[in-house]
Length: 181
Image (cartoon, rainbow, N blue to C red; front, side, top):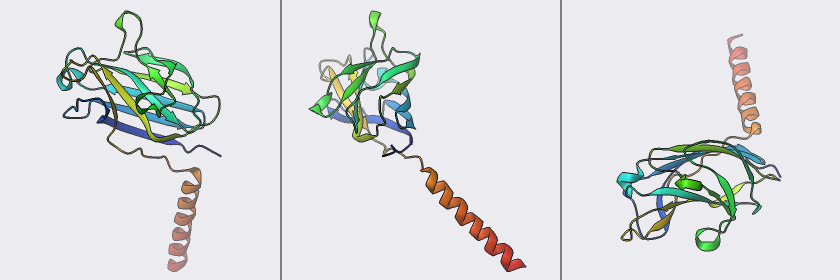
């Protein structure tokens, strides 16, 4: 089975687990790739205004079709990225990308981080495939919360789809040329 290619940018802000619902989306996650290699870019919007000045994104829980975790490489940006075995909120996630490090290295307001995840075998993402963990909230906000995307993933068309499009355009061109002759 070939894993479908994906290229999506999802906005996050829908409460999944916790008690505080921000008034707007607070982060975007771009995911591209297929098979066993995927590239991620996470961008935190103004967490200070939507949560408080101590808020940060500490982890991304991930749900895959195979339940396996990847190796991480090519990390670039405002936070470290490592893989931790965990099942995340509700017990339905396979692992998480940990975005915290030594000396309070973490993803805070208006920062972004990108990385490549390589799995041992092809995977696809299923259901609510990603959940962001926001930490450093006030006690009144519940101390932390998990949030899922509020925009549906947009898949990349398979090569067969492009082939059918080209064949169809070729037939239309052939018929138009034949009609003028």
